[in-house]
Amino acid sequence: MYLSVNFYLNNIYLYQKNSGAVICKNDFAYPITKNEEYSKITAIISNAKSNDLISIYDNDHINITINPLWSLKNKDSITTDNPIKKNILVPPLENISLVQKDPDLNAINCLCHDETHIINIPDITLNINDNIYVFDEWTGYNQVWCTMKENNFFYTYAYLYIFNNQSILLISQTQKGLENNHYFDLDIMSTYTHTDIIHDEYNRINCHNYRPVFSDLNILNFPLNQNLNRSSVSIETTQK
Image (cartoon, rainbow, N blue to C red; front, side, top):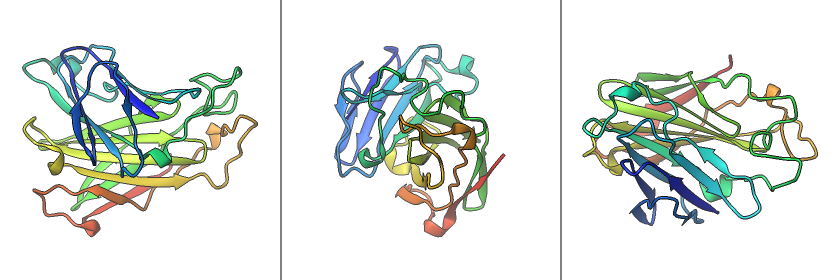
C-alpha cells in the first residue's frame, strides 16, 4: 500500500513515520509499512487555493483521497508570508481496508449501500486538561472526513476514516508557529468496530444507520513541552 501527495509547488508536505521523516516529492509513491503505530503528514500550506490531493492506494483497489485544504478557515489570509501548519494523521497499515475494484463500484459508492449516504457524523468532544474542543463541523466525503478547532495557541485537527468493518478517529493538536516540531504535538487514536451493521454483497454498509461511538483512546504521541498524562485526555461521542 502506498501514499502520495499531488500538490501546488509552494506548499510543503513532510511525511513522518517511526523510521524517520522525508519531504514529499510531488506525486511520488511512499510505501505505508507495517509495524508503524501511525503515519503523519505535516503540511505547510501557503497557497490555499490549490487543488492538492493525498491518495492512499494499492493495486486493484479503490483509492482513498484526502483534500489537505478541507476544514481550513480564513483561506484568503493564508499566503507565503502567512502560511498555516496542518497535521494529517494516517491510520496504521493493519487498520486501512481499501475496497477491491469491481465493475459495479466506484470511489463514490464503495462505502455505502446504494441510495444511502452518511447523514450525520456525531459530535466528538475532546478534553485536554479541562480544555474542551467539540468537533462538530465535518468536511469530506465517502470514507474520509475532517474538521478543526483553533484558538490562540493551537490548531487541533480531527480525521475520521470510515471502513467497512471499523472506523478510525485520529486527532492531532499542534502548537501554532512553524518552528514547533513533531515532538510538541499531541496525537491520539480511537477505534470503533461496526458490530451490528448490515453489509451488502459488495461489503458496503448502510450509511443511514452509521452511528460510531468513540470513547477509549490511545495516545500516540505526547508533547514534550506540556504537562500531560493519560488521565489528562479523554473523548466523548454525542449522536446528533
